[in-house]
Amino acid sequence: MAKNIRITTFTVAVFGVGFALGHLFDTGATVSAQGQQVFELRTYATNEGKLPNLLARFQDHTMRIFEKHGMTNIGYFVP
Image 1 (cartoon, one colour):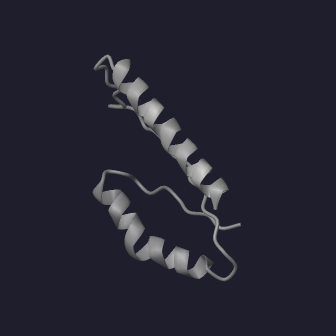
Image 2: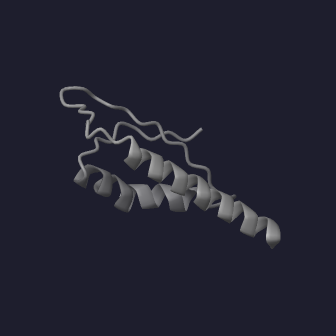
Image 3: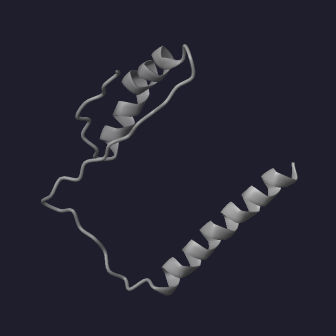
């Protein structure tokens, strides 16, 4: 139990410091990908027997959510 509390406290502290430093050094500059394509590769791992549920969730829900937010679905692969 004490180990979990230390890990959680450390994680919160790291994110807090990162957030503070991000605001401290914020120059107001933005990065624009206009006219360029940005690709994101995601890897998902499932527990034994749960792969059909994950595939159904992507087919029935997740792909539409991605498209709603301007993401183009290129491909999904299962080894």
